[in-house]
Length: 91
Image 1 (cartoon, helix red, strand yellow):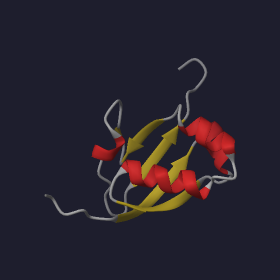
Image 2: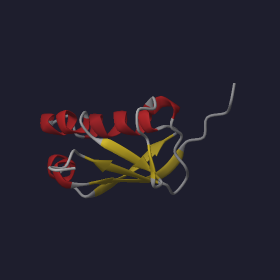
Image 3: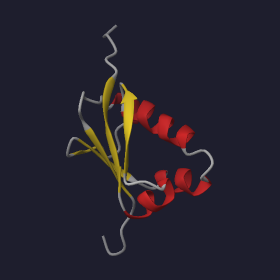
């Protein structure tokens, strides 16, 4: 079994995700994208619109699209960045 490396990095929110989170960015401390998203869902549990918007978002991890990959299989790097991109009109 591979060792789990917990990384510290930044999650950046765009458009509706930023509005629902109430912040433009925040830190993560997680090994995978799934862990980081679980953390921010818990952190913003008092904002039900946040979880709803997050469920429709696309994600970039260090500039690479996550696409349909299982979020638990997407590792996060130390000092990395997760971009949270809600659907955009016309795009």
